[in-house]
Length: 190
Image (cartoon, rainbow, N blue to C red):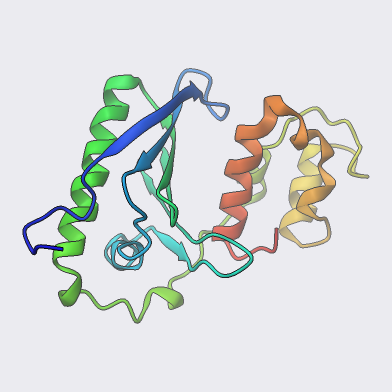
């Protein structure tokens, strides 16, 4: 690859969906033209509130971080998920910013120390953070009296993520994916 060439030439928006966490917003799914896994550790080293999970034979790696209320996840495969986006125009701007960030970081990668990324403090979750991404049906299928007790026990590792069968319903897919990512970023087994 030529030194002046872009590492990522394009990012295409594949889907614009309703944001489950905030019904007044949208969520965006996009895809890079090539796998960005080579640059993700370097981006993690530069963004204070980011977490990077290295991929292995059983799971894909990803970089997650917040930009204000938005949650951005970039997967090794090139899939990008962004939640709490105001509108399609903002989505296009965010995607362009991500492309520029990946290219700029890739060009400067020799100057970035990635040795400390595995020591970064995990995202701290509280029960309200988890509750926000639960169905809030208080169905009791998990064995708890409601979604808040489930959230508390999940964080105390007295409950399993998979015990909330309601999250498996198609209408809760976005909630489940977001909560699963947040738990992983916080160091929980999912």
